[in-house]
Every structure is written in structure tokens, then in C-alpha cells.
Length: 154
Image (tube, rainbow, N blue to C red):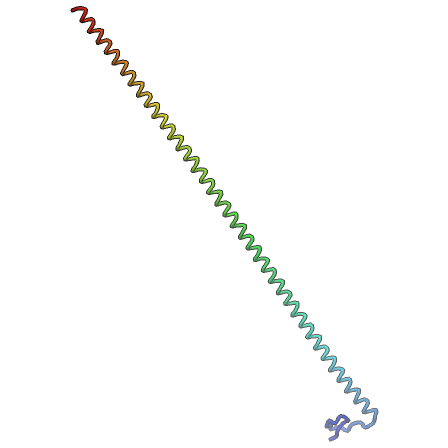
């Protein structure tokens, strides 16, 4: 067993020449550089992963905003539907009231017509009564005439 220039145990005899030591140092530096490059690559990969995660988060936020917008649109549609329903209901009620008022007006007209008819009937009754009175008067006159005629002959 041998110790190399770093103090590590090795089964091979190290180059004791400066050239060998230089080569050994360069190999070590190369290995260090490789490790450094790999670490850099790892860091780059980590950064890429972080960027991807950020992109995903942004996409999620955008999706959430879209969902919120959709919900708002749905709420607006619902409000519009409710307003339309309310407007229809009010118009329907208004038409119904108008119809009822018209019917009441017609009822009143019919009542007035009936009243007029009753008044006419009363007028006719009065006329008949007057006619009867006149007839009675005529009868009385005839009676008087007969009585006078009888008086003449007596």
C-alpha cells in the first residue's frame, strides 16, 4: 500500500515525478470541474423546475380567474333572468288589474242599464196609472152624464 500526494491510501505506486503529480492534480481539477458542472446542471434543472412550478401556479391563477369570471357571468345572467321574471309578473298583474277594472266598469254599466230599465218601467207604470185615472175620470163623467140624463127624465 502506498499513500498518494493527498494522503489517500492507494494500491498503486504514485508517480513521484513532478510531471506525474501535475497530471494527477489536473485530473483532480478536471474531476472537480466535472462535479462543479454537474452541480451547475443540477442547479439549472432546479431553476427550470421552479420556473415550471411558477408557470403552473400562474396557469392555476388564470384558471381560477376564469372560473370567477364565469361565476360572475352566471350571476349576472341569473340577475337578468330574475329581473325579467319580475317584470313579466308585474306586467301580468297590471294586465289582470286592468281587466278587472274593465269588468267592474262593464258591471257598473250593466247596473246603470238595469237602473234605467227600472226607471223606464216605473215611468210606464206611472203612465198606466195616469191612464187608469183618466179612465176612471171618464167613467165618473159618464156616470154623471147618466145621472143627469136620469134627472132630466124625472
